[in-house]
Image (cartoon, rainbow, N blue to C red):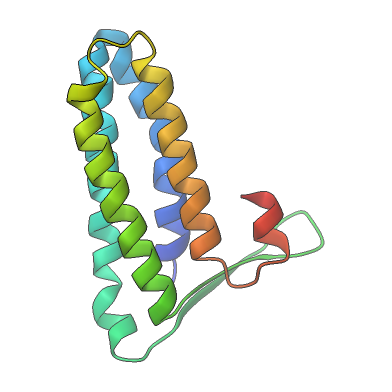
Length: 137
């Protein structure tokens, strides 16, 4: 389970866009709060990797794809620090955006693109090699 955590961390914000979109059908505020909760969950899951990585273990997962190159995720100490900083700042920005975006008309679109950007950023930070994921994310 711990080896698959980097892949799960990248997928949660990407598929969280659907949750934000569905929650925003009821109210725009619900979509904003859902985006903040998703960012908080991603931050929490990233923190779960800290004990294993800080002890010197490198987490890696190779995901087979239909393309010639597999998708490889690798988390070492530097990758974990970058992922933690990214998730923490994204969480703060999403919490702040709940109040900031109230008078705006494109709240849902902002939150959806914010989550897609978070997913892409984490995909680059947690990538095991930079040949294939750099073009994918």
